Amino acid sequence: MSVSASLDQREFAFTNADFERIRGMLHQNVGISLSPVKTELVYSRVTRRLRATGHASFSSYLEALSPAAPEWEQFVNALTTNLTAFYREPHHFERLAKLLPNLPRPATLWCTASSTGEEPYSLAMTAVETFDSWTPPVRIIATDIDTNVIATARAGVYALEPVQALGRQRLERFFLRGKGRHEGKVRIRPELQRLIDFRPLNLLANDWPVRGPLAAIFCRNVMIYFDRDTQHRLLSRFVPLLDPAGRLFLGHSETIKAGSLPLVNEGQTVYALVAPDARAR
Ligand SMILES: C[S@@+](CC[C@H](N)C(=O)[O-])C[C@H]1O[C@@H](n2cnc3c(N)ncnc32)[C@H](O)[C@@H]1O
Image 1 (cartoon, protein in one colour):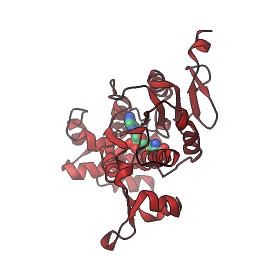
Image 2 (cartoon, protein in one colour; image 1 turned 90 degrees about the horizontal axis):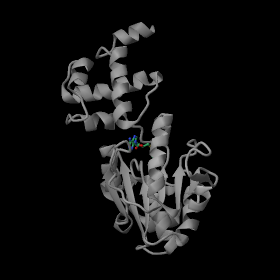
Image 3 (spheres, protein in one colour; image 1 turned 45 degrees about the vertical axis):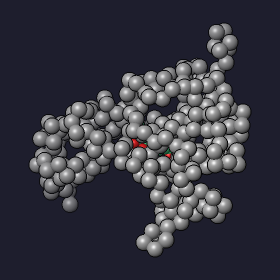
Image 4 (cartoon, helix red, strand yellow; image 1 turned 180 degrees about the vertical axis):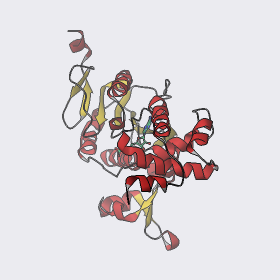
């Protein structure tokens, strides 16, 4: 089948102008820079929203869409990429476990793109293990722009199979096994959930309801979707929120240009603040 034939067979006409309009709105309001290779993905995800809202064409759907429209939230939710895992990039959790006893107490950790919850729950498990207590001197703020993933994270129910990879000890300590019709699923123990405050938050918003000083900011695998300017603006807003002893954790492919911000690379995309006296020099 030729490309034009497959395009003709689409349920809804989707023009380059429609794609550019979606791309512009997403970039301006969410920070995500969509490359043209994502055209098909955008078509299939937004088509679902057309069906759900009863619009007969992209142009009528997009005409009615703005950040103030009730549909906006679902539009954004449809276009985020939420891939995550428990203990993703495990060296970061090992590093945090070593840092936590020396950080100010209570230590506030901000997980800025928490997706379906595996990352903040991994932070909570790290805190409980480090202090060998269900009430460690740690509080975790977990945020994401996508309200669907925040709801999944709050529910704390996961498939058993990937959780088994964490080992029997963690499975038994931190999860409740589903029985009967919940067989094959696990639920996070409420003691662990209590350590985390889940909230929707757009990293591009002018005001973040998050107060410093923060012992750690986890901003992993989200800046890859942003352009350089947006990344730099975001990082410069993290700096004043960090405790002098705090750390910024980025995803493995997200690095900070040397000298552009008062942050020093400690390796493996972990950053500390440059000491104030060193900054003055
Ligand atoms: C690929 S996931 C990464 C999840 C997790 N941090 C990890 O490393 O496993 C990226 C997350 O960033 C969120 N996101 C994208 N743009 C955002 C924004 N402007 N503000 C907050 N979260 C955003 C998405 O909804 C998605 O859940």
